[in-house]
Image (cartoon, rainbow, N blue to C red; front, side, top):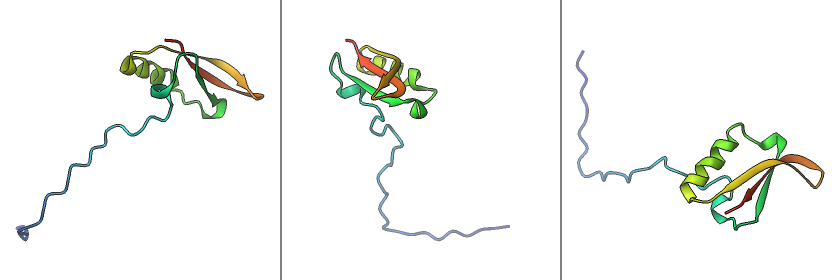
Length: 82
C-alpha cells in the first residue's frame, strides 16, 4: 500500500515547547532562614520529603519538615534552617 504525502513550502518551524520545570508548587526558593510554610494533612503528597530533599540539593539550602498544627489544622510544616 502506497501513501502519498503533500509537500507544503514556506511554513515556518514552530518554536520548541519544552516540558521543563514549571514554577515550584512550594516556596522553597523564596524562603528566608527561620520562615516556614504549612501543608494541611489532606494535601501532603507522599513524595513531599523527596521534593524537600531535591530543593535542598538544587538551592544548596537546608529545610526541615515536621508534623505540625496551625490554627487547629493538622499537617506538615517545613522550615528553612540554613
